[in-house]
Structures are given as structure tokens and as C-alpha cells.
Length: 127
Image 1 (cartoon, rainbow, N blue to C red):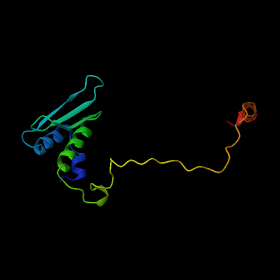
Image 2: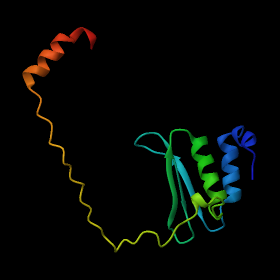
Image 3: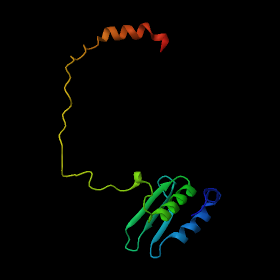
Image 4: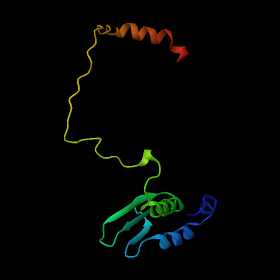
């Protein structure tokens, strides 16, 4: 694992070297500049051609650092329970219909447009 201070000093070309060191053999990596908005894009595909990573950024260094972080962390499991995958908690087949609680209070009266206009005219200098 690299230190943050070290990584922040890298040039985009140095980050590209680290990406090439960390990309698994057989995977494809392509980057370039989009003709639509002149932003830099990067795409990573596995050996079967399935797109695994695709992103566009205005700054090539940020894009390449993001890709490097993804490559370095993709096989790790979450250490903290808040980030661990939960299963069995939500059943998509079980649907519930929820009704809002009814209120016993009557609805307020509608505002009078003339009264609202007079209020704003009176407080015009405060707005």
C-alpha cells in the first residue's frame, strides 16, 4: 500500500505506471480524451471483454488515482461491519402497502390572494 503523501506527489504518468503494475494479466485498460466534453476517460475490461470500470473526470490525475485505488481494493473484504454486505434483510418478493396515518385535525383554511398581496406590498422594503 502506498502512502498518501507519496501518491499526491505523483504525476499522471507515474500513476499510469502503478496502474499497469496492478492490473491483472489479460485485462484491458484504455484511456483517452472524450470528443464530447474534452474530459479524460478510462475503461477496464476483463479477459472476457466485460467492462469492470468506466469513469470520466476533468483531471487525469484524479481519474488515474481513482482507478488505482479501485484496482488495489477490489479483492479486499470490508473491515468494518457498516460496509459489509448484508443478506436476507430485504425480501424483494414481500411487498407492503402502507397507508398514511389519518389526522383528526381539520385542514387549515386557504389563504386569501388579496391578503397575501397586501402583506407583500406592506413588507416590500424588508424583502
